[in-house]
Image (cartoon, rainbow, N blue to C red; front, side, top):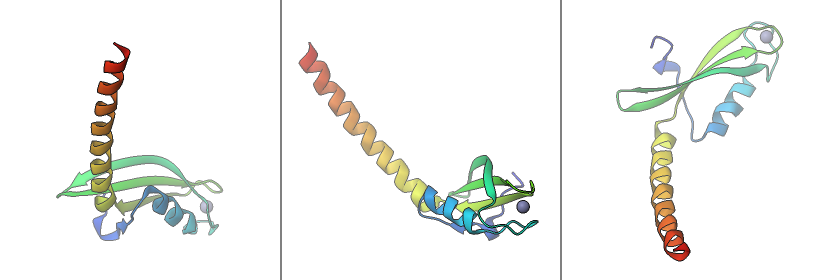
Length: 101
Ligand SMILES: [Zn+2]
């Protein structure tokens, strides 16, 4: 995908950091702060790294801008957490199943 701009990718630790970063960028056209609103989000895996590409649009003038975030670190943590949660849930379901029958 040609939207991926690795050189400009901003490393973030959580989704919240992405939104904070975007809200701090002045619009490239009208210059207003906190102007960009999320339009489309892409998750891209490339060369063992994960990128979140957010296409945004200025809510005042409609100027469109694309932000690229390097989410490799937190995406891997997220997968670990998800796996752990699923394991816990299976365990709980087994217990519930036994108690109900
Ligand atoms: Zn604008």
